[in-house]
Length: 234
Image (cartoon, rainbow, N blue to C red; front, top):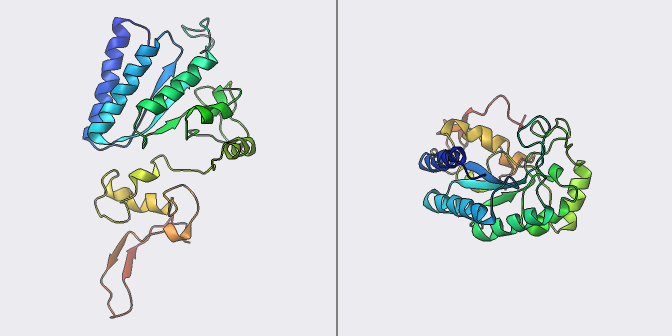
C-alpha cells in the first residue's frame, strides 16, 4: 500500500482481523496486491506478518497474490499496471516466506500468460466459473476451463474443484463431533459436498450420515437418524 496515515491504519485493521480470526479458529484467506506503489520491503513485511499469525494459530488457508490493473473511473485509473516480472518475483518470494501448508493463489484471468504463475509458485487458481463473470474484474473474462486444465497439466499438476474450505481444514470433520475448524452444524454439509480427499468432487464414499444411534437389533448395524435432504447419496 502507499505510505500514508490512512493506509497504515488500514494495514493495522487488517492484521487485527487476521489475528482475531485465528483466535476464533476461522479458516482464513488473505493476500497482497502488487503494484500500487508499495516497495518490495512492504510486501515482504506483509507476508512475514501473515506467516507469523499463522504460526500462532494455524488458520491461514491461502494467500492471494494479485497484480494491480488500473480500472476506469477509479482514483488510480491512470497508474501503470503491475510489472510482470515484479509480479512473478512477489509470488516466488511469497512461496519462500509462507509456511508450505499455506496455499498460494493467483487469479488466472488477470495475466495473459497465466501458466507462468504455476512456475513462480502458486498452487491454486481461486474461483473460476464458466457461468458467471469475475464480478471484481468483469472486463477480464475467465479462461476456458479446458485451457486452464491443459495449462495446469502441462505444469505437472491436476485441476480439481474444491470447497471454500481447504481439505486440510476438514480432515477431522468425519472423526469428531466437534471439529476444530468448522461449526458442528456444518459437518454433514461439508462431508456431503466433498470427496474422500476433501475436494469438491462427487464421491459417494464421502457421504456420511449426520447422526447414528445404537442398533435396535444386534448385528443389524447403526440406525441413521438424519442424513439430510440435499445429500448426493440420493
